[in-house]
Image (cartoon, rainbow, N blue to C red; front, side):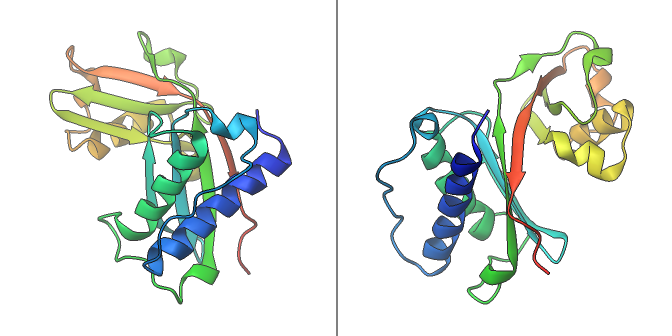
Length: 183
């Protein structure tokens, strides 16, 4: 979907955005953005440090161009993921940035259509909604049912809530790329 140079560009945008946000500086306005990165698209930015999750925020739908969506998600992953303290200036060099560019959501009618390693999931029931990226099931070695259970839990629902007739299950795919792991 994206060329190596476009991926590197997005990763540099994410890193620049984190550096500016953590430093309390104004967001940079990027000029001469490659055409493919000016299109609106949902994306998540995941931060790892020492092989451990350090933050993850994203948008199912674009907040603007893909570059703007990545900027916003990177800033929020660094400073506003409620599971972690905000990233400090000292931590920035140790961060490994991963970007997941999402396809639009597709309603699942048969859970057997869910492919582990290919699909991410979103479950929506009542006012609750939870999402897990495609790589999460693979990283944890989950089968389909465990992935559904964990997505329901991420939504703040009982693990078997995906079986509720009112639950809506959506899938999506993502192009996932990251910086090299820090040594």
